[in-house]
Image 1 (tube, rainbow, N blue to C red):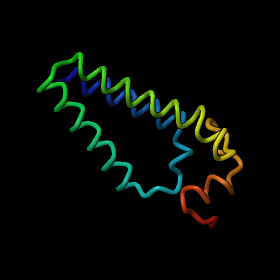
Image 2 (cartoon, rainbow, N blue to C red):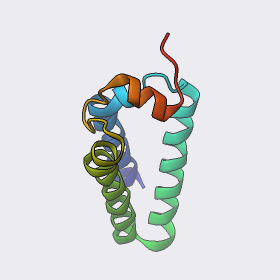
Image 3 (cartoon, helix red, strand yellow):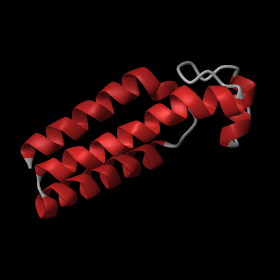
Image 4 (cartoon, rainbow, N blue to C red):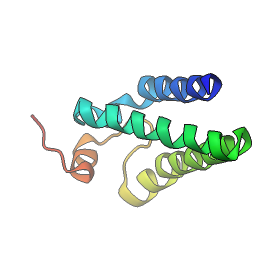
Length: 99
C-alpha cells in the first residue's frame, strides 16, 4: 500500500500548491478529513480490487476536477477555473463572506 499512499500524497501536495487558493477559507479540520477520506477509500479500493481499479477511480476523480475547473466554473458560473476570480462570485458560490 506504500505506493498507493505515495501517489495519493503526491496528488494532494500538487493540488494544494496549485489549487490551495480554492480552499483558503475552509477550516483545516475539513481539509484533513477530506485527505483521510480520500486516502482510506482509495487504499481500500486498491486492497480489495487491485491497483488497476485504484488508477481507474483516481482517473475518474481527476476527470471530475478537470470538468469542474475547465468547464463548469468558467462557463456556468463565470469564475476562472485556475485563479478563482472574480473573488466575489467565487466566495458567493462557496457561501463565504469577505473578512
